[in-house]
Length: 177
View: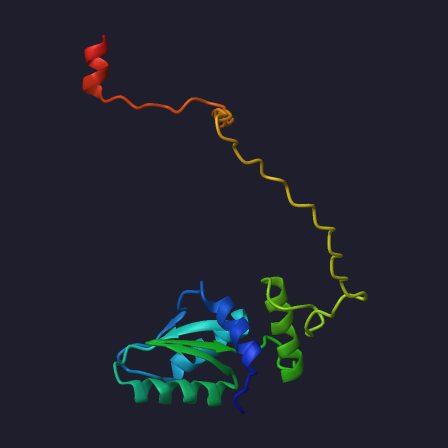
């Protein structure tokens, strides 16, 4: 089978879906065997999107296992995080890549990303008109104090609606009682 190559948006949507998944297939010390491949195939048929844990510490070996699984089973490589491999294959073999990308786009929309049409939002039909300038108010005349006059009282600042709470310590509270 041939490996499925996914577009960026499709891969991102599948990565988001796979975030909460736990690995369903764990490779043992024997590595990638026939029975492990059958198990991965069975899980892909059941779930479409799965995680596989590979125990090896060698990065090149993990990448080789990842490529071999994708090529042999005809699935898409979604993501490799450390020892976890994320694989995806549509449940129905008849699904084309375009349909798979459309499905992933719809899934991404249900998660709150993007627009339904896949296009950017269109501009409103009418452009906003700038606000008209408000007529300027005439400047206030400032009265100057003449010699011998007393100062005018200045209005006090408004009082608070609620008085400010004062906190008392335990010691002060005990002293009051």
